Length: 491
Image (cartoon, rainbow, N blue to C red):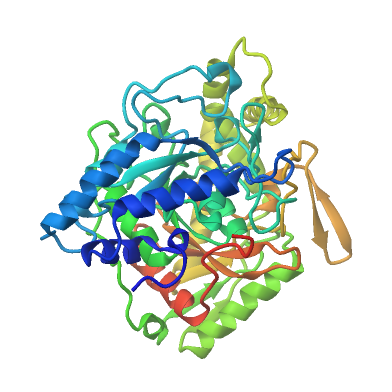
């Protein structure tokens, strides 16, 4: 029996009703594509449209029909495994994850006519597991901002509050999930691009350890980056992650894992008994919104009440040092790659031009060797913080929201103890990039509340290097203790 509208159906729940022949993959596909058509651009003048989806793929309906026939014949594989792991499930993919024969612009107007010659590895794995790519989601240009808008695609808005952004760069993915356009979505993360929008849209996002999900060379060699899953629950996120992860011949940075993550978490909160959890509300000196601090502490108290030992810690980090080290890192790798690709282009978004310039300036002040030294200091401090605990919990965002069409080129204003404080760079409004520096650590972003402006609040669960099961167990425990809405109220 299906309880509620089809667009609210979770991925694992959908697989179960497909197998029980209570729902056809064609019916779910039609329901989701119809919802996109009627909701994504529902505002006639565009000022309040969500605009999460940049392309729908109606041809995938035939794959849904093939999946329907396979279910009628019967499925022998265990749920969530093998060639039927995603059989018949619609998946929204980030536009940068190319599909053979389809446009691949990365949000750049000058590349609107570029076409992908082959499937991105994550797309290929989704299709090999029986998944259907029915929609592709918006990003800022080159996925280089924490908001999602571009001259090519316009402004993507948060379905929880359309004046505000879903975050970026995987903002289209987060908004699509929260609005009920897909049960699963792909994302990527080089400075928080999965976790920031997951937090702002009330969904789950996972930054896997470096090398666990294949990317495309040459930039897959950047040790800050990684592709990964987003969904509306911890279990659904694990389902998609199991499909995406693993060694791939095209990406020599890929590494093996310890086997698939669980996709069922019975008695999830029991895991907390006897666990030690480090709490860091500011990760050093980040200025964190009072409402976010309150939500983090409230969640920490729930964990303690369920049997965990929660220890509040301080980290010797400063947001200014993190900004300088990471911008210089980008100035030696991503910035030059963007400059090379966009050479001679006109009409670039101001944030793209500014990122290239800022990254180059930062690299001029700090050599690559010096960035490595700075990264090692940050990594050593995190290793010390994690030494005697199972996980670290911290906010995702220092700010409670971002204006949908803003670019924050002049920095960002955050609340301080004695009034508002203006910070030089908008990245100081997010507490994510330190864990791209320590990119062997798995990080799961989960919702923990709703702020006064109507946007969800997200929390990062940070694990020891490659200790992926631990962060998912912790996320499932929080989900059990503090269930969250699966869709934005407007949906």
